[in-house]
Image (spheres, helix red, strand yellow):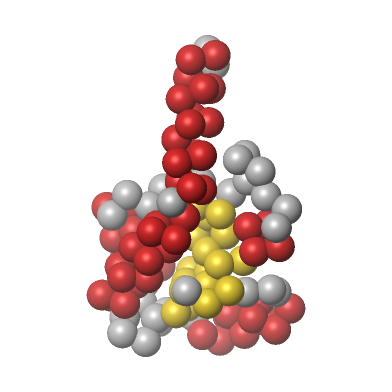
Amino acid sequence: MSDKVLLEEAMRRRAVFNNLERYLEKIKRVVESLDKDGEVYLFGSVVEGGYTLSSDIDVLIVTEKDPFQVRAELWRAGITDPFELHIYTPEQAEQLKRRGRLRKI
């Protein structure tokens, strides 16, 4: 990769991290438009405070909806890298909720 491409990617990622709350609200709106009972949580290094611009942004989405549909709608809304989407049913999410440090959005 050229230095120019790497610099552009670093700047794009910095813009995402600088506007993280706006992106998280967008994720929440999309999820709630698909499932009024859907829940969105932030977890991982961003919540724990150990992230860098090369980190991904872990987002837990709890819904009964088809994960492919949820992922497609979020992609259409511009939610791509560096977001790492974990789409679980409420039952699947219980273990992560118990052991992980989650911040509800």
